[in-house]
Image (cartoon, rainbow over all chains, first blue to last red; front, side, top):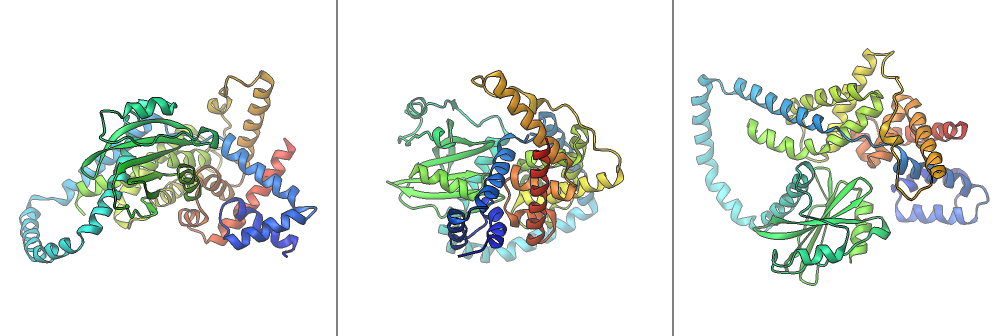
Length: 251
Length: 170
């Protein structure tokens, strides 16, 4: 049994989702029998909830995205013209030619060896790209609706399978709509959910080979699973714990 | 990496975290227009140093650049950045079902929270924002703020104690 001093030092990491199972259990046991610690725990927990739900998350104004993109693109052109002076162009072309011919044989062998792994990696990369596109472009939703009975039939005729559409508004993951996206050389269903300000894209397509997606790519968390002949992949900038909670609801 | 590949990769890994960059800059500078300019400057610096990004967490990497840009600005403008503006988002009416009294209480709380967070010393404020608003893990924060995880935890804890005291006094 731990003492109050250790309990105090565990409370914040507990609320921040940074404890392992045994530390969690220790703290929970202590909170159940200690007369004074639960009050402090409640204050900390309320503060966290207040900050997450009430403190403003400032979203970048629309004009800023345009400004940033055009500034960066301009910068890319500037450094490009610096890099490719005409005198360097021939030397560069010759080097590239050499490198390509030397590397070709090796590349060919590697590519055959890695075909399976690459397919999985490419699919995961396509999912990340598709998620990013859905966030920065206007094309997040083809069918904006919080009604699962509107979203499901919408896919009829657009896909050769029927994705299972569920809504988890009650658990804090409301469905906001869906769209058809293109992944792994085929049209797939993308169901779109929200958790506070975070968008979750859930991709669903028929497959018997489960996707071995990495847990995180470029700062986005991914959870993939296979269920009843369908591949599912959820992706979001939401933290891993809540994304897994979402996936748990879907199962 | 040629410039086109670099630009494409940058647009895929770094540009999507614009909101996180802006949120942090806005909380650190407490000024909308300054945050605009600093975010743009930070993105240009990030692009120049992008060869030093070896994959991994694009958001933590970008926020490290945003943070440095903001802290440099804060050092140069010691007196600036403390203006308390009227915050329309925080005062916007939330939900139609709440009655006027509930709404007033809620708005007062939002206002108090904002003021308390803004009054935190900047080294606590940045960590509270990254943890509570960006929901980053200790490891990600440690990466972005360039301090060990132990320091992240102690600053977070001190920041929270100050927030509790501040909220109590409101």
